[in-house]
Amino acid sequence: MSCGRSERSCGATGSKESSRSSSGRSSSQKVFFKVFLTERGTVREFEVERFVPYKNSHILKLKGIDSIGRADEFAGSEVLVPGAELKAPDEGRLYDFALVGCSVVTTAGRPVGVVRDVAAIGESTLLVVEGDPGPKEVLIPLSRHICVAIDPEGRQIVIDPPDGLLDLNEI
Image (cartoon, rainbow, N blue to C red; front, side, top):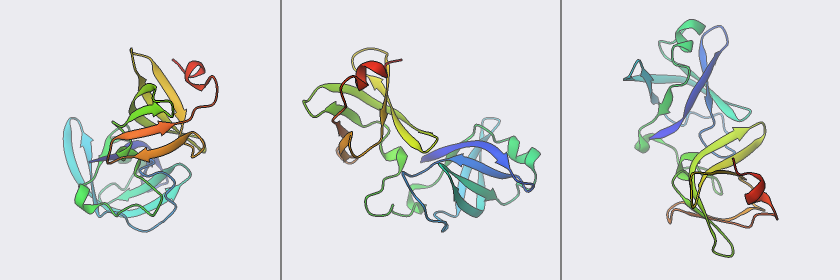
């Protein structure tokens, strides 16, 4: 199960900074014991030695990755974890990957599209929605004031967008 993307190395020991795996998680406890990363088209298993939240991402220290150069080899790799090893998210929280694939509709029932990605930009989180109809992309802030109902099991997010949001964010 994909839970993020390796973005860059940090620190002298080659820890990996990974894009955020859950919306708003603030715990520094170990969430899983192993991860899988791609290396030249091959999926490799690594033990997680340390997992620390940092801003809108997490820092992972992986066993066997002990230098910045070695960690840089995995920049851009997708971080995969066995679904059975994920800790259930805290009450009122969701893993970002649970939102990918959800349909997005307005409170008036207007289809907006399907969530293709969840992007952390600064302190904000955005739903990257592939528009319906057509190949447009719409960015929707993941905010309780806008995303008024989120049902990952039913694969749907209901939004109440402020005037102009859907038109201004088209790319």
